[in-house]
Length: 319
Image (cartoon, rainbow, N blue to C red):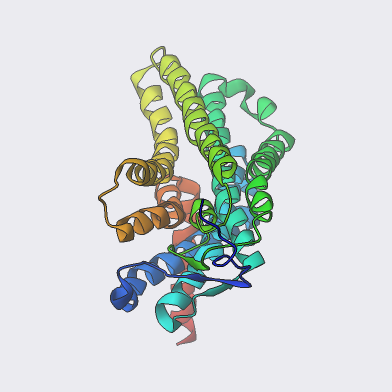
């Protein structure tokens, strides 16, 4: 059996490679990444600001949307600034404990976002199937509790991963072949048996991706069953209230599912593609969610248009 005593060491920092194999293109790749970063921050900030300041939007659906926007801001800010620093300045070192903290934020808030999507599916189910009892069932306290439970579940599911990683003090290398501190990308460098960590990671992934997807599908199956008993006009209106949520769900789960399938079965796929796909579920949903809800949600769309027109008129008046 090979001894790791001579080759293993305790790293004070890790080195992130960004997009391995595409180092010569990092500057060019940074252009769309920067666009996505600024679009995500601006879009989610605007949605969050509108919902917080407008009392008429303090309804369950919009409160869930504000929670979603907050999560997207955390996900974006926990990975993208560091990645841009790698692209622009080759600043690719990250402190050991900061790396574990980033691991927790990335996986923890992704899990929380999935839980919020389940809560939003339940919100649509209650709104369509029990419209007269909607405000009674989904009171402000219930909505806040749902958001808190989604956050608590994300913490309880993911916190063991960085805590268990702390038991590995010796690593064969400190070079992470990834753009952020993804759980298994870090643990594969450890000297020791990582089977338990791998099994826990797979189990958590199953619970989040499969169980949450099944709950969302169940909610929409009951919604469709209820819509079969109403008029065509009422059916069309109900579909309109669900389409934003469905688009946001697809934007979140499809990149995760694609990345997981390619990671498990795409052995011949270039590693750079694996990394780009792994970034897609951190980049795509935060950018698309404000657009999807901003376009579909009439109240938010009207507020944005009014704000733009007001600023335009104010500028013309000052001139």
